[in-house]
Image (cartoon, rainbow, N blue to C red; front, side):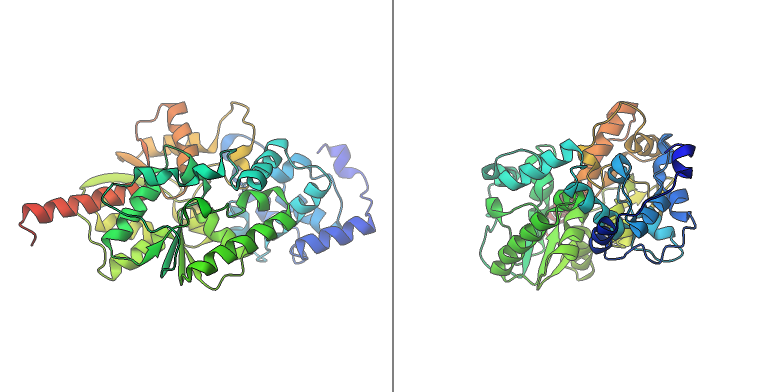
Length: 396
């Protein structure tokens, strides 16, 4: 926005103001325009102008338009929310503004394409719904994964690890960990549908509500008391959107509970790694310690990244930006890859499918040395190391 535009008068459309206030549920009403949110936006880390979060909040208050592409650049990383002295629900305001933008045909084309893929194939990756259970082929033949039926625990795999061949080892690792802990669990197989994260990020509330109700019905059929997810995006989406009769947790939280209860035991991997905290896990779900507890139990030392825990730097994939057209410039994942190389880590770990994809691209782009791995696969390695140690000790 130019200085001339900033100085121009704003004309409030009463009808549009009503739509914006309804969509945002008045989330920005307590904002007093201090600008702390804009100052905390991480975009300056990649030499891009930070999003004017304060401007978006003001537009939410007044109901004026003109948010355009700025609105969809938001990573929904919640860095601004964490720093807001007034406790403004900034993500709720941005979500509401996106609903208005979608209604006015301002949503990016690629994001709308992902939405249509969910509508037609129950996933945003334009892959056949019938291939959703292909990850089961990665599970060892001696494990009979329960698909459907009732169980205490429902493991919701999610779209990205179901379809990305490089990530299908993650749900395969998860079911082996659950089997080792003798957990009464089930999965949905090809009956599983998208959690709706990309639909919500696009700003289509009616379809998102439809998906939420569909998932709630599927989950209820399992009679599960707890739903564990591979992705923190799925967990937060279910918590925010679906009216569920079950607790929703990220898998790191659940595995940490099994570890504390003595149901899981790991061998000693004796290595040093670094860990990228996913925004939705560390800030959205406040789950910072669980991944580190699991790694410590596996004999893994964590050499922390420059920005870690609740102060983590986004990988760049949140808020629908997995479908954003790149311009070839610096990316958040490039920074994380370089930060990993500044540690003594042998591997760069994370616990979110989006993060794995973006960080892997970043490592390849900048030529970083530490390979990217998903935490569950490392924990399976530690489990197998423990089994081998027991075997060598005669089962003691």
